[in-house]
Length: 193
Image (cartoon, rainbow, N blue to C red):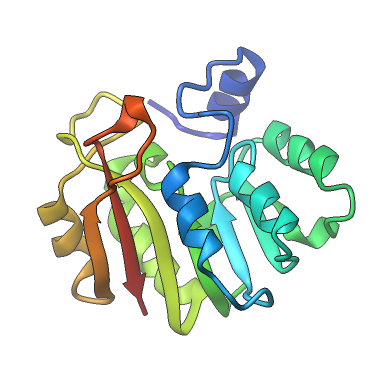
């Protein structure tokens, strides 16, 4: 399966968006609500329809960058937040991103959409993009990893083995406030560079 721009744009064109819950996810909303520094430089890779970015913006965060391989979600975000600078809407491959020094990167169904062969590259890219002490936080799926996907699953043990050598694992636990279809299938995490 080639998970390239054409693949994702076809999914958007066909409205085949099984990951899209139509709003900011509850665990991420609750996490965002406790962030005090509105000047944080935040990246949301694979932002999809950008509910988290829109929520952040409405909550007073203006230094939010969103990235997606497909053009449709970025167009939707621009329509929702007309004042967002074009430089903060990034179209392209995450692994080609050169911006650095993010305080926070939010993970919401991006990791699980990547070919599992790219997971070590994901970890290295996150290290490159975060400033020292920066955090990677969000949700990871907790169901067996198979070749059928996306979404591709994983387990706490797999995630610890993948991230622990280079990140401090501050939190990795079952999300207690997932939406009903994802109950007991999501792990909330905060990893620190």
